[in-house]
Image (cartoon, rainbow, N blue to C red; front, side, top):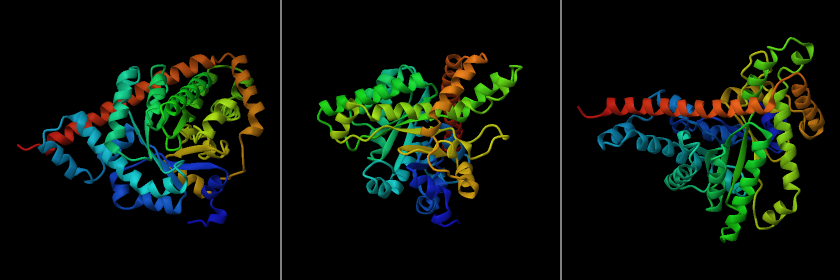
Amino acid sequence: MTSDATNPLAELSDAGVAVWLDDLSRERLATDGLAAMVAEQHVVGVTTNPTIFQKALTNGPAYETQVTDLALRGVEVEEAARALTTADVRWACDVLRPVHEATDGVDGRVSIEVDPRLATDTARTVAEARALWWLVDRPNLFIKIPATQEGLPAITACLAEGISVNVTLIFSLERYAAVVEAFLAGLEAARDAGHDLAPIGSVASFFVSRVDTEFDARLEKIDSAEAQQLLGRAAIANARLAYGHFLEVTASDRWKRLADAGAHPQRPLWASTGVKNPAYDDTRYVVELVAPNTVNTMPEATLHAIEDHGRIRGETITENLGDAREVLEQLAAVGVDYDDVVKVLEEQGVESFEASWEDLLSGIRSALAEASPR
């Protein structure tokens, strides 16, 4: 274990990057593994998704008692999924509650995702968000809502009711701007309804590695030196420009009025920060995206890589905004259509999340069947 004086995770925290873990399991909770990461590795938040829960449910006996009870009670599979996942998230919220209180409600957050099959249904997304908010019943919860067109009004509606939101599946700068607008409108509605804005939190989860995967696949088909020189540069440039927009918004009079009313900013969260291409450095989507008021949610392997050999060079975004703009211009010049790339990524993201949810339900269905009385 490195000392804080030489620990890159400590350096990230000192630079204003909140270190979150993109993983959760009941075994990790029961063995105090999450508590140890909070105490020793500067972890101040947790994100989850259906794939994470499916992996947890199939590893070890930690869920057997609850699954047996659900089976004996004849609980349907979708309600069983809510019961199992919200139990873990509630427990994690309790582990992180001291962080939440120590940071005035900014960190110590745990995210749980709305059923991704509802990504194109605004009303049902809001209804599911309300149900999860009530089931977990912890002030440091985030409800994950995808940044689809139909998700945007759901984000505003939930924030207006005082429900904290992690906006997920953001790929494009245009959609990110719409997410920020949904956030501001939601807080304004909450303020006008008399809600205290201080407890209402939000992050905007901007996906990173998947962007390089799609851009690189298209660049590799272009037979030119200019295209090859752009490999692996799109995702970081895209995220950096999103942060540039964040800076513009938080400098605006509109935001200052909300801040004066007690609101916290909607921090950019860098998601999908484990590298997909083994040729790339395994810390690149962390060390190249360091700036104040950001979050980086890392798979455990990435977090360990940062701790082991991450080189934190201070703030790496604002000084590179000009270069980021040039990268997007160069991508267009070699014939890669940015708008088509991000459209495909959103469609793939929703499909992938839906498939993961179906896998989770299938696993729970099998577990309930095995535990059912004969």
